[in-house]
Length: 216
Image (cartoon, rainbow, N blue to C red; front, side, top):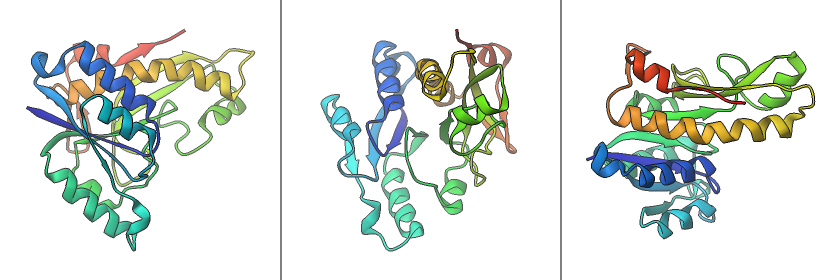
């Protein structure tokens, strides 16, 4: 069984999308993958209860209880190792992971960023897109590297930027397709159809097509 561990800090709408898709597509029998655990650095995160209600193990690890970022990441890694994960999914996990953590799980950690990387890494992506006059925007799933939002790209969802858009409208349009893209990417990595090799994403043409979404 290919175990998936999901890290959250809040409700985790992308976690919910992955959970829902995994159940609808019956990943356990269809591709031998399952969500083994959900871990939050915030004990009151709503996503923990969502996980429990779905019968998924939910673990709270308050980062404030650790003396340093390195100490928290070491404890987090210890818990994650118990599940021997094929994929570690960041779904609204509001922590920057240390280089040591990232290197230990290299090729297994996925994140989704609300922009078409390498454009607009960091924060305020929707307003920055509008300010730049872009005609398209979207989201990117990528392997996590020690460079913030700098890991190799797995899949992207593209939406048009409309003349009437403000940042909230653009974000809402993109979120619909984030919830489609992320589960597809997680499954593809869990199935071994997508791999990180020498710092580059490797997949076949059919998989690449399936991980490119054009929204409206």
